[in-house]
Length: 280
Image 1 (tube, helix red, strand yellow):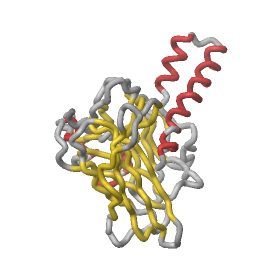
Image 2 (tube, helix red, strand yellow):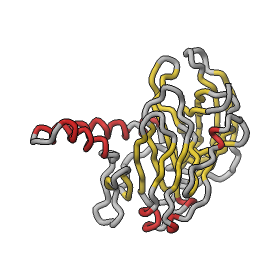
Image 3 (tube, rainbow, N blue to C red):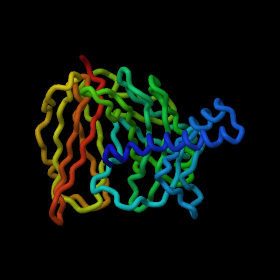
Image 4 (cartoon, rainbow, N blue to C red):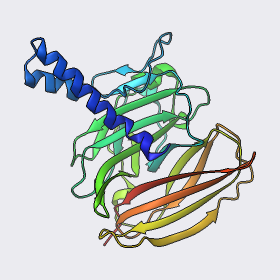
């Protein structure tokens, strides 16, 4: 998933605001219209499935369910970026506690869940206010659909000034059932690895990963990891590809560049930024 696709959530806010303004014109007070807009987390670019009992609709604190497949998706799509993700059983009725370390002066946090199952187009979207670092996700829909830990990817991002411009920055999430997660992302240590999941719409012959640290003053990027070949040997289309990303010891914003060689010829790239809480 390119970062531009993540911006659909922001586009949804603009559309919701327009709907709220129209409602005010027919009698709703500005305050109630604003509250109504705040409750909507649905991406207007997604068409809810019309013949499925768990279609993508507003469910109070989130939008969740099955949607009609988008046409013209990119070759590489991001499914998940986590620091820790424990096993859980949605049928137990305990919420999934999702935590993160917010950067200083960051905006609201957007959270998204996607499924790694092939040919199932499911998504959950919600928004958490700036400064907060925990969301408790009800698992009733997951339980009803029979989705568990192996079927779910998690993404979280915020907007932050990087190099003088506002950009979308991913946050390594930690998730566990019931109690708030003990996030490795928040320990200040650079040990362990984040887990990145991507999916390719076409079969690949190889995938390369490059990582650089972005300076806060807008200077030149500092290479952290030169282009590294994953060397998995087999990259079938539509399968989730797991990529370990070493957790940086130094706090800051980092850029990840993925370069994919297509089995049929040609190439595809995916670039994104993430915040490492680290130390310093």
